[in-house]
Length: 148
Image (cartoon, rainbow, N blue to C red; front, side, top):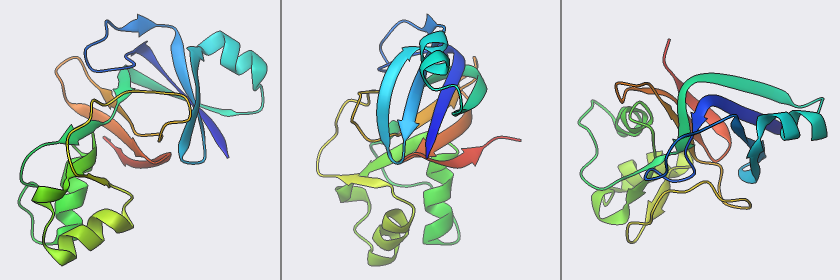
C-alpha cells in the first residue's frame, strides 16, 4: 500500500531548512520518494494523500531513558507522542521493554544515527507544530500517533 505524506513544510533531516511543497511517498515500510507534492500526485493519482499541518520530517532517535509509564507498552507509546521511532539499545535492556519496542516496530540502535528521509530508507516520519509539539508519528510506514 502506498501513501503520500505532505505538509506545509518538509525537512529531509532535522537540520535542513524547511522546504514547502514537497512530500514523501511511502510504500509499505519504506520511503519510495521525496519529491514535490504535485509530481507525486500526478505520478500516483490513486494514492491516498495525508496532508499534515506543521513541519514533516524524519522521526527522532531517542537518546536517553524511556519516559516513565505504568507498562512497557505505554513507555513505548510515550515515545510516539514525542515523534520518536528509534531508541538506543542501552536504554531498552529490560526484556519486556525490548519486546514492546519490537512489537511496535521501534528501531533499536547500537549507536545514534542522524535521522533522515532517504528513498529506500525505513519510513519513519514525524510532524511537528511550530511550538515543537509532535502532531503525528509514522513508524515503519504505519501511523502510530496522531494528536487529536
